[in-house]
Each structure stands twice: as structure tokens, then as C-alpha cells.
Amino acid sequence: MNCAIVKEWMPHYIDGLLSPEMELSIRLHIESCPDCAEWLEEAKAMSELWSEMDADREQLQAQMDFPDLAADVMTHIEQLETGRRSRATKATNVRRRSAPKTSWIHYGVAACLSLLLLQFGVFENLAYGITEINGHMSNSVTQWFGGFGR
Image (cartoon, rainbow, N blue to C red; front, side, top):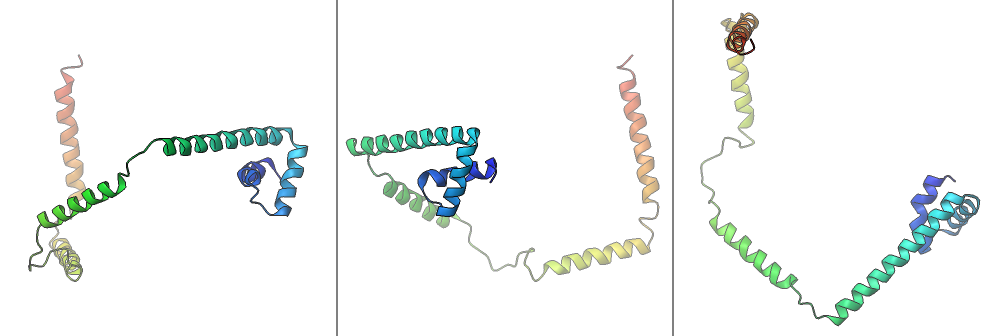
């Protein structure tokens, strides 16, 4: 067994939740590994601190009478939700464009229009046009910034 596995199972080892075989394997590793033995001592100290903190918290809660806010908060949330529902827009009888049965029609119309535009040669010189526009843009930017850099 390696140190990573021992450190991973250390909390369960401390709580006594492991099978006897696994516990024996971890104990043998801890006895032969000083780093894991130190890790075990630190983990036990942390476990004791957590236990003390839980006991202190329970004792403090027993001493002080904290009001139960959960019921009031949940009632207020329900009131807000009811108000939101009443203010929500009412559904109309008009079908939305994004209705599942009509969405394929939009894709079909877009495909047909694209093929039609291809037939008429609209996209024929598209690459040349983009290159031409790019050249004009870079020339105008160079001219515009050219005076500032000198």
C-alpha cells in the first residue's frame, strides 16, 4: 500500500469505518512509514478539534434560544413565487417560431435559399471580395494612424 492510498482512507481509518483487512493494511503501512504516522497524528488532532467545535456549537445552541427562521423564509418565498406567477405573461394561442414541429422548416428554407443563391453565382467572387475589402481596410487604417506615429 502506498502513502497516497493511506492518506485517502485516513479519515475512515480514524472513524473505524474500514474492513478489518483494510484497517490492518493501513496500520502496517503507518507503522513502517514515519510520514504517514505523522499524518495520522495530525488527522487525529484535527478530528478532535472538529469534535470539540461541534460540542461547543451544540452547547451554545442549547444555551441560546435562536428563532427558527426557516418557516418564515419559506412562507415568504412561496408568496414571492405566487406573485411572480400572477405577473407572468399569459400564453397566447399564437404559435411561437421556435415550436419543435416548425424548426425543421426554417432550416429547409435556409438551405433552399442558399442553393438558389449559389445557382445565381452570388457567392462566386466572395473570396475575392473579402480580400479586396481587407486590403482597403488595412490601407485606410495605415493612412489614418500613419500621421500619429511620426
